Length: 505
Image 1 (cartoon, rainbow, N blue to C red):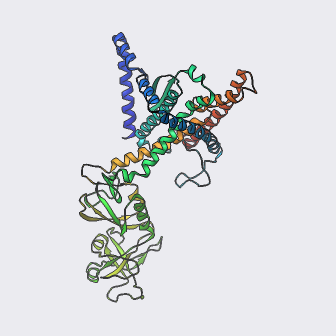
Image 2: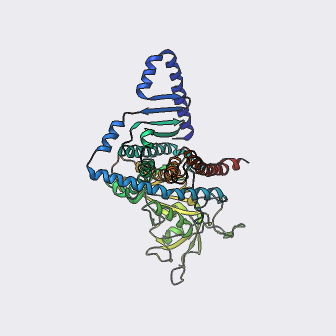
């Protein structure tokens, strides 16, 4: 969905919801209040809150289900969660410090420097495509639900009552929470309490691993419905794509080759497109065709790049071709060294590609193109495997890659769309990134995060013999948490400066 449309629709939804909420509270006060109380919904300006205790019995059954072996496995899992959480703490702090003190002068158009690893704070419209905001919201909801479910299951295992769940939407930002009995939680021994506090981080970590496993096995899981990495399918052509039109590519076309280079995946597609600039292919054409279609003019050189030209520069449909010598250095006597031919007609007559000047039929001709221009021939087929007329384009490969959307999933049935598994794969990738990021951030001792409660628990458990007064231990916990909060705040300010403020100055 277009981001502007998304924000307009969401703002309208909140506006209508808030209007009717005010209206019903004034006209139908008691029935409407009873409805809100029964459903657990609270409507505020540009925010929505839902709280429920309906899942408490279900969680209690899950926590008490199974035999002693199942319980031991779950406890072992939560013990591993404590260890993982404490191992993530220094990683998160180091990444925050690197992010704060990095120069931030790297060129955003190129790949990141391998020597500078830093924490990427993902912001829609800044370092994430704003068009995919629906994926971000869905991913955040899933990650938050998994996180809170971890706290709830660990609490049930430790006999801590779960009093409810809730989720708040501040415009499009979701925030979930689990409501536990603080008295029972604080009455646990320190390691049992850490199991509950670290369970959310552990579940995010496990969820990221599951999503990564699904990504790694997507070719197997999708095999009954899609053929994976056999060809690529055109899923989108932007409005400005030079390959649109009756003689161009069409959505659902299966591209099999580009200039003789086999296309089987997204990686080979990009490699073939890059090779169109690096490797200038030759074409085997008959001498009769050349003699009948040669439009050569006086040979000249461009004043700028010195490129040899034997065609009328005002005619965009023709190009100068050079006759390539064979391996023995012989040039066919019946053809001149340079000929001017119509590009489309010539490529339609091509019997095979050549690189060394040797052709089984005809002679090898290589187009003389500028370094930023290439001739691309796209061989394609339809859903039934029937070959379609090739599409020929003269231009820069970048114009193709940025305006043509492709997918490595070839549908096995006509009612399937190649874009569906791409959407599923993209959602899985965002879940991996967001889950790991949520686990790292929550491990940091920062106010409002799990790390603050974990720090407090560790301080009160290990310093009780050295620091007798509870207030002093609280002060130490607050100081450590304040440092973590300061680092996180500075990292946010750094991102805000580099992303928003500095470009405006």
